[in-house]
Image 1 (cartoon, rainbow, N blue to C red):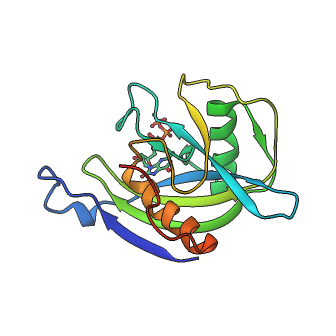
Image 2 (image 1 turned 45 degrees about the vertical axis):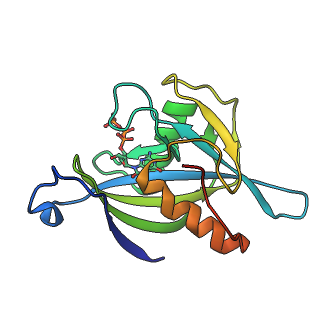
Image 3 (image 1 turned 180 degrees about the vertical axis):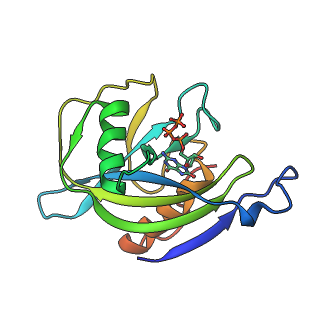
Length: 162
Ligand SMILES: Nc1nc2c([nH]c(=O)n2[C@H]2C[C@H](O)[C@@H](COP(=O)(O)OP(=O)(O)OP(=O)(O)O)O2)c(=O)[nH]1
């Protein structure tokens, strides 16, 4: 796995932003596959009202609680937020993001199997997407994911609408 660092541009960024300790976040990239095992669509959800970047589209997940592994946090978050129970979480990529509100380490895992019906328990929206992503705006921290998908699929052109 690789780890990259991104900074969102903001006139309000603290001077010592890069010295902040990152918050660990578990993120689930739920993927549908076709009959040949090719990855087709991925699930995106909108951030609920009351959260920073409300209304922006992202991959579901959330912060690790004390003592949790990424997989445990992901299983808890996806059950809390979407009402589903995931099977294995496959570690995929790690991304460090500097936002004005926080520095986060995003631990992206692909998930292929889950049980249960989707329930938007935080009144968020969900949408199965492929490239180029049609929902907007997307959270800055999700753009690298779309680029990784593009590389995997040899997708040329825009990864999302602006
Ligand atoms: N869930 C998720 N968070 C992301 C993505 N990309 C990205 O930069 N982030 C950032 C946004 C937030 O700063 C942080 C996740 O925090 P959160 O507020 O969603 O976590 P949480 O559900 O545990 O929220 P809370 O309990 O603190 O309200 O990671 C992504 O694709 N999914």
